[in-house]
Length: 204
Image 1 (tube, rainbow, N blue to C red):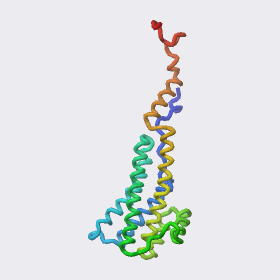
Image 2: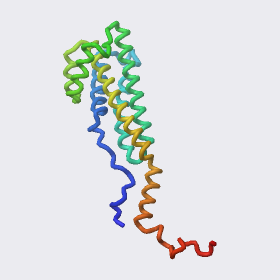
Image 3: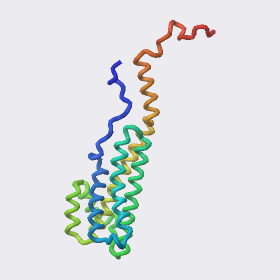
Image 4: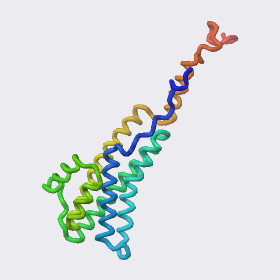
């Protein structure tokens, strides 16, 4: 039997190509810059929490997709952790805007619609960093919040896709069972010891 005929572990995906990952890179860069420029780390514990939430949203996607080849359960768990971190960050931006008495862009607002349109065309961090450097803090906060929404949206779609794959194909144990069955079929395992009585000599 050719060993290449059976593959136990699926190859790890390239997370760099995932839209949700690209959005989280934007979110992290915007958040780090926003916190360094407009918030005082020594007086506000939220600074470290926001930066950590932004990092968690990004890094758990990396770890989840990388680990996904060996464990679909671990992959889903880490992706959900990433989503939770992004939701936390989204709330932090709303808190900042509200506490500083700035308007929060609604989903159907002209500004948010424009941001989603731009988000469809650009997934590079530098584009949004240039926007942040030329806008007032309340606009930057809304941009970062809006990009966090986009990251959550695409991450939720990825999670739903991974759940469907898990339901259809199972986890590593199920894959190992199928590979073992395939090996036995290809190696003629079920025919060994069979002389017309299926190897059941002495059993009437």
